[in-house]
Amino acid sequence: MDRYLVARVVAQQDADAFGELVRRHQSQVRNFLRKLTRDVSLADDLAQDCFLHAWDKIRTYSGQGSFIGWLLKVAYTTFLQSKRRSNRYAEILEAIGHTADLQGERVTEESDEITDLDKFLAVLTAEERAVMILSYACGLSHREIGDAADMPVGTVKSIIFRGKEKIRESFDIQDHQYG
Image (tube, rainbow, N blue to C red; front, side, top):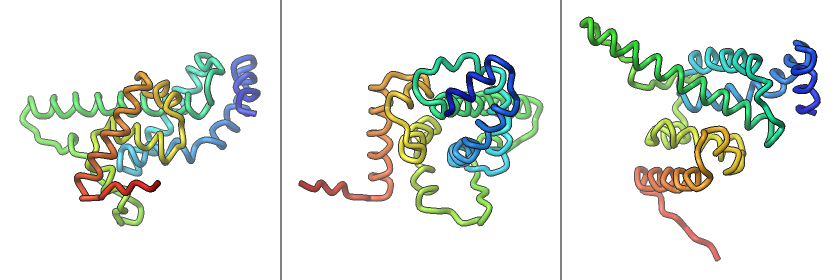
């Protein structure tokens, strides 16, 4: 059904079809960005930017892989661009003598409760966190994650392995093998 809606958007600039795609996938995009940024309002802003970029770039969706995989790639790229802008802004402020805590990532959950998942994700780099979220929270295959993050499948597998190891070591979690 997504491919049919995408075809309508591409062929006719059908805003209603795009609106349906947004309705179908906005929760998953927002949740991905919320876990990635750990900042609800920033994630919501980035999700809006993501859908604007998706509208502009929908012709680049080739139909290979799932539409949500492509959309999460757009979301991840939007996040990376925002992070680069934020880092540049912090450098400019520092150069003119102002200090800003733009480098530190903060948790601003609606409930102000930090979950175990948030604690686990906090020990990972942004790249590791993105790959782990795409895999475990979004349910994408290694190939889809590779497409979304512009990295080879082997790199995706290595990042997942290293991320799990980092979490195990940081929280002294034993890996119990069954069989």
